[in-house]
Length: 257
Image (cartoon, rainbow, N blue to C red; front, top):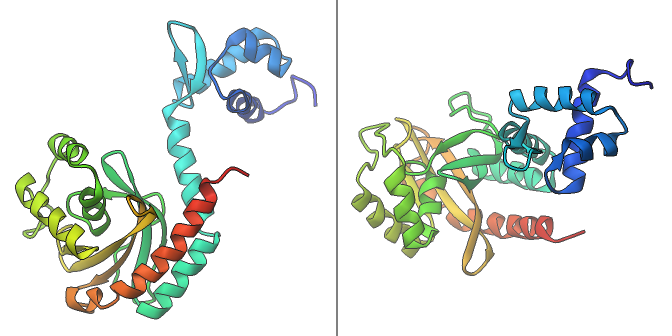
């Protein structure tokens, strides 16, 4: 395929692929050389990618790096792909056993990012999906991650986020959240008692990479009218069994090929 007939989208992806392969920002001459294309053509493509956030140009060194839009897309792609991984199959088995929605998430910045989620078969449920983000101070997974963070890190997060009240039960004072974090660490699981959505409860357990590090969380969600917090807590031993299995998947993914 010659230069003129090559689709614009292929040219764009080629620029991104070259930067990813180099594992560092590249200058325009480096991009042109790697792609075997005129600098003018590559410059036009790179500028368009920069304008839309797919690339970021370092002004001092005049080099192109992967932009924020690509980071967002990569997380979405990861969440989409993970639905077909063994972890999703395990999550589906768990949902079959507890008959309520379950999901896996990680702490991403100041919010929770859902990596995978399997809905229950009931029509009454909270419709979220992999790639969704939820607050840390009023969700089961969020409160779990806060509890297991180092105190200074947790303090910084609580100082910079908006402790918005979503329901009458939302904890909006840092002192109250600290007390809840202490209780969560002591019992080994977190509770969201209608703090994010009225009528929705959740219980979350940690997924450990080792005894001292929480790399993700596993949660069960249900309408309070169908499952009380006390009933959800009875599933904690089963949730922890699945969390252990999923921890092995996370560890395997982190190991070099």
